[in-house]
Amino acid sequence: MAKPKKRYVCQACGSVSHRWQGQCADCAEWNTLVEDAPATVFSLKHDLSSGGRAVEFVDLDKPGEMPVRQKTGLAEFDRALGGGLVPGSAILMGGDPGIGKSTLLLQAAAKVAREGHGVVYVSGEEAAGQVRMRAARLGLSDAPVKLAAATGVRDILTSLGQMEAPKLLVIDSIQTMHSDTIEGAPGTVSQVRGCAFELIRYAKENGVALVLVGHVTKDGNIAGPRVLEHMVDVVMSFEGERSHQYRILRALKNRFGAVDEIGVFAMAGEGLEEVENPSMLFLSGREQPMAGSAVFPAMEGTRPVLVEIQALIVRLQSGATPRRAVVGWDNGRLAMLLAVLESRCGLSFSSAEVYLNVAGGYRLSDPAADLAVAAALVSALADKPLPDRSVWLGEVSLSGEVRPVAHGNTRLKESAKLGFERGFGPSDAKTGSAELKYAGLGQLSNLVDRVMSS
Image (tube, rainbow, N blue to C red; front, side, top):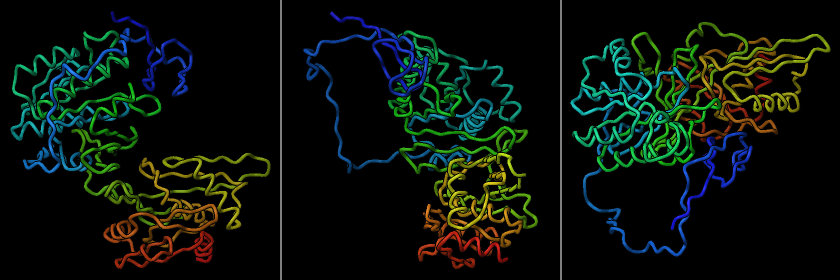
């Protein structure tokens, strides 16, 4: 007979322990182990090699029609997805509270429904009347979206089984769903995992594009078990600052398209508006050349995005402790770059406060931004503006060498389209563009000499 046994599941990483302890042994988080539903321990003598149904195997080259992507009507949303919704796919979308996840999905659901496709929107956080109020504000009241407010997975799947399978199913959110076959409150690891499994199985069996909205923790990670991200086909993050109007939809995992592809939206009074040219959004307000300002052509998936990097240097009186403040870039990488400028180029930042900002609230993680950051820092230190209509790209090593970057030609071509005339970067043959004047900088000291002598 099966023997019930207690187990404790970490709410941060989903690891299982057979006894309670204050700290999770896998993720080192404190007080995250919660008792889960009793597990059943089966004897190893059970033979699973018979008694099941036969699984059909097919060849990779089997002739037949490939799944056709369903366009959402939002070009930026489709770009981040890799071209549109794939039938039978499961999409997990996370983001900070109030960032606009529900607004974006309601707009996409309305556009798909207006094209004559069945759409079901299930809200577990709001009443149906509240969702209808938002739809009226967004001008979507006439869209034939089937709306429901429910949290029971059994009730949702029973209702879906009594109707024709929709093209798109939105669950807002997975942390509010509850299954009566699993012990625990909504939002626990076992409930999130079990509810997601049932919903994904329905989507796979009926060819329904499923979108699950996920809450995020204070660290920005999607709440719930880590296995949830492995269960779905696409993981998307809706990012942005509330103080800025722009929002970025980023694909962190995509089995049907490119990873790190982004879609850019702007929050307006009537919902989210698509931004076809994000570079103009992040470069707005640059009328005259200013000291401490450099433009960097970043790559987001397959799209080049030009952003402005701003630096400010403030000299302090002797004895004061200098401050380093960074917004939109890695603090540790700034410290490394300042050390290279002091050690390899002879510049002194030890007695000065350094402030670095990526304009527009944009966040950079591309190492190719090293040269643009260095150019902004040297320009601010010398109080001399950089050459007008110029872009900077290149990774800086600890030896002061400017190294090649990926997609250099694509970055420079996009810069030329936006009216930039000069480019500075690594001195390799693969980087360069006929559309603008390009100057290779082999060492970081060449950048310092160029700025100081201008």
